[in-house]
Amino acid sequence: MGDISKDIQSKFVSDKLKALINIKYTANWLSSRENEFFKPYGISPQQYNILRILRGAKDRMKVQIVKDRMIERAPNATRLMDKLCDKSFIERERCEQDRRVVYVKITKTGLELLTNIDEHNKLSFLENITEKEAVLLSDLLDKIR
Image 1 (cartoon, helix red, strand yellow):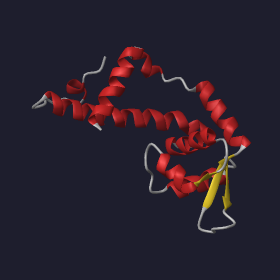
Image 2 (image 1 turned 135 degrees about the vertical axis):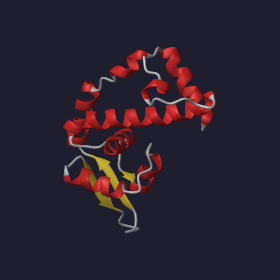
Image 3 (image 1 turned 90 degrees about the vertical axis):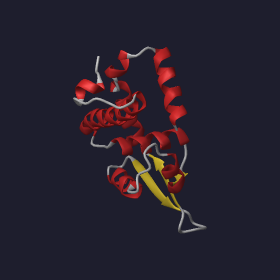
Image 4 (image 1 turned 60 degrees about the horizontal axis):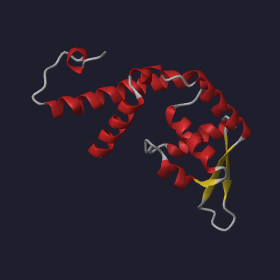
């Protein structure tokens, strides 16, 4: 089991500061694992998030709504969607009544990619905590926000 004090070879002036540093350190660690996981699929974690949002929508959706629902608010969301369009994972469509509004929707290819990812999405590091601990952790993170 990891210990943030040993991992970064540091002492902390308080347990609250230690918790904050531990959250940041763990977030970075998780981000690295996530990037490695998605690399073979040719997408980023942010692009995966966009695909998941569109799968859940079941129909076309305004680009702005997708941006609003993203876990990590990416200033480059339009560019991320451009790349997904280039790979035929999503389709873009302009609104006829208001040319400023753009809709996106997931394609069959995008759905197949998500199915493939879902079948191989083994987050082994989550096996280190119980369901009860996961609820507690989630509640504590919610409390911080």
